[in-house]
Length: 107
Image 1 (cartoon, rainbow, N blue to C red):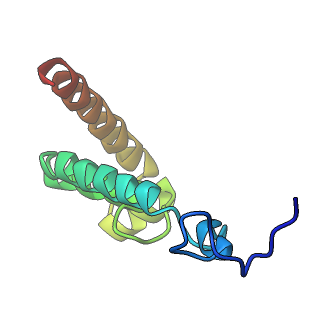
Image 2: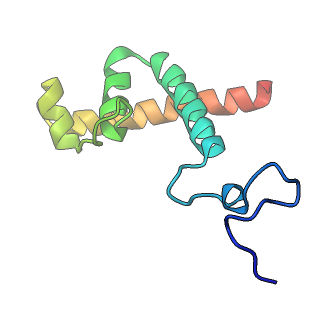
Image 3: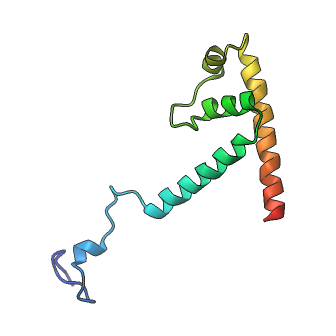
């Protein structure tokens, strides 16, 4: 059976075309879940030491910008070598994993 998109739906309240999801419109549930996860991540990063938190924010673009390389982070924060940024990133990720594991045990 062929039905027009302009036909009234079986419930009579909507047109058939209004029942079909528009692929160009983002799924609100996914967007909300993503935003909540970002908020939780920002909260976790906020408990890190300031320099470590800043490296994590820049490395992963948590402030809405593009993620930066260790070399770019080193320049931005005045590190003498990119390995300083790598070391702080490793330490920050280790602490974030520990926080996540602790939260999983508490939750």
